[in-house]
Image (cartoon, rainbow, N blue to C red; front, side, top):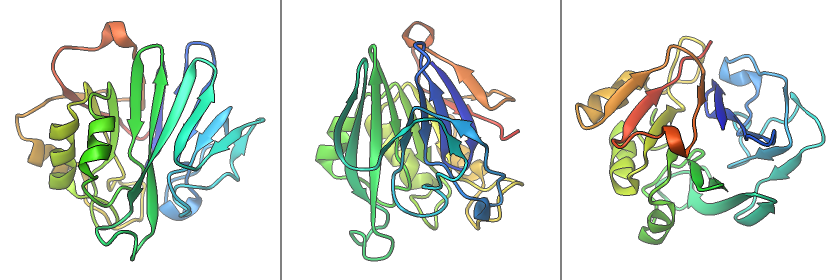
Length: 215
């Protein structure tokens, strides 16, 4: 599969069979310029404008925005209900973590999770091959909470998201806070680009943080 980071918490995942899944598309209030993307499936973790904007999405796509199992042939998408804050949604409402499973690969996108999930949810997300996790704090978990989740879930690849860059106007922490918190616990790969081509055969033995660049 090919994973493209489009900025903020938005990714496009293209499977080998050509299926295109767009995760959490944002509006222009983020400071990022929204990409016009043709998709077959769009997942939305929650209904905030920086995660649910469909105005730049084209094609005959299906929206997945509810918990539960959603089958698309060889692809299964399962949504797990969590909270956008530490007060069971009292401040910012709910959030859905989505697990994409295809041909033995498991890709987890944690949306705007604002809490350490329950033990049950953690157990069901454990062992993801790829974990897309917010690290910027304020509206989500912060760097140290993200690291705690990573240590519990033991993914093969950690892709940080929802952090401050030169492109965004959102007041959240920069990626450096998360990398500093991780210290030497994980290898760090700086791709120098916004795309990665990955499958089971190319996964490495050690967990690593993969840093994508917004271009």
